[in-house]
Length: 361
Image (tube, rainbow, N blue to C red; front, side, top):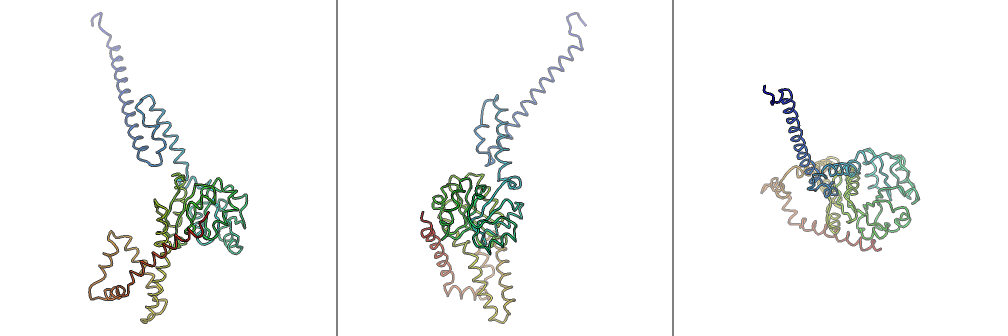
């Protein structure tokens, strides 16, 4: 080794330092780029994180750490600790029901099964018999009239008949400023509700009676001032009674009222007719009713499970010259389908009239 040569140990150490530095830099940029891509996907394609996107979309690498920290903390705050995460946020939710009838009963029962505690629910119910049943069944607070106790409500569910909505709103108004409002009253439009309650945080829905057994279907419409998080609260409440869907135009709720809101009555009407026919053909009433109910339930499940239309499914069991063909032909001759459509149109029209009649501010 010459006098100007670098000692072998020093040279090895230098190579080691350079290698370590190179690997560190490579790992840093690899992790940084992977992190950017992962969080970009996470925040850009998850709807709940729309609010934090501008803070993440930065080309300045110096802001990367700040951007990620902001996104992470904000998303945790806005997502994991909001009502959209049912099990955690439910612990602090207070709900007041204005009216304690069948629909309120169905929702309350579903909420308690989902983990809401009785002290988080209160009901305003002026009829003592109904109030007593609610107390005995659910062990919840039932008030005979509006009071300061309502002021703690995060959500008010308006389960009153449309003709008494305005009257019921007047004594509640002084205690309703904090709450999000969910109405299950048929026909009463959001502009009337917003006027009576002096709030634009209003969601209107149209449920149906199978909600009483957790098999309902509810359509929802929200005013523009209702946030996504508040919609999540409403979805959580309604999900306890069955399925739900959002509609974009409030006018569509009149059609929903005619189709699914009043729909269970149409089914019961046909069950009556089928039972009566069965008895007339020699079955006893119990047998005929059992067969009719099971047929409706089974056919509905078949339709739900199939990708084919109701028309195709009907044709599959309607062989020309057979018994089903004879029945369908008889109904067509009698104009049953035309009459049925006209009946639903009458229901839709009446739904609109209810809004005009009882929804005047």
